[in-house]
Image 1 (tube, rainbow, N blue to C red):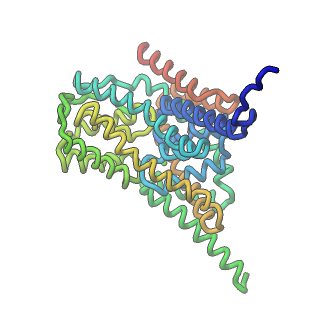
Image 2 (tube, rainbow, N blue to C red):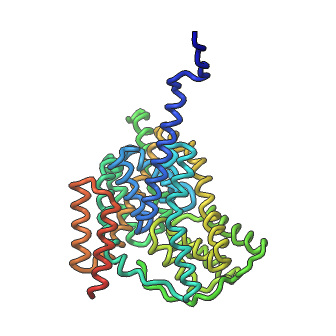
Image 3 (cartoon, rainbow, N blue to C red):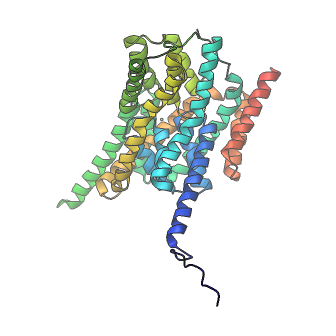
Length: 401
């Protein structure tokens, strides 16, 4: 009689194995999706948000529109780059802590690498290549992506006439030059106050472009930086990432205050060039810090600056994940979130309107935007193809004119 084979310790169909495989699959999906988005997400935070909505709500169905706008609104409550924080939170929703890290890193990494390469060109040759040709075709396609996302989110965010009026007022305030943070705060507080007033009355007896860049270049400020200089660079970028609310213009003010005025490590022209590079590359505008880090201390400076300015976003979103679901759990905070979402959608519309004014400048750019919008409406074509098509048209236009 032949000996029996040794018994396995685990049953053949261990449910834990299936859970681990599913978790690995979701983490791999998050990694690949946000690497792609980080590579093609031109156009600033409004465009990033629109692309994430198209990819994760419309095409993949990872989250509902309601969940998406709740996360979009909640990220406005914390400092840091909102579109990056939205990516981090969406990654957490899909693959928990591993997804949180993977989504953020993968969304930031392509832009950080591109900006580091451009910084090397800038330091080595004294200028960076003009990007107008590529942007000529890309930005109109990005406008179409934003407009499509706005219409898709409209019914989810504008739940009644009151919220519609609030969104229109927020859009008007933005176009008249009001501060974005004040608009968001006013929208949230007005909605909450109105909900509270209605409840009291019922209970009472009465029943959110680039130009060619020419700079001075030169060697990094500290070709061989000391530990103290690197620590100061890291801590300064960490401070900015921890307290900065608002647009790229606010980022410019913070960077100028610290690196031009206080430390004197870069010039105003170098700072402007750094911000422009952050705008013409895909992904978050905060990669401006990567460029400055390279100018100050070479590759190690680029790495430390990037880590420092984005690190607070990972920490803040990690804390925010514990609160977002609770915001919908009570009537008062739910109203506050509705108002915040309406104001955020209005800001997104205002930014797209201003971007459109500077991007759609002739019949060809108008045609790019219109064709992209029709393709988005009638098909589930991936955004990457629209960006690639816009790039090809922009390069052809540059070569032929």
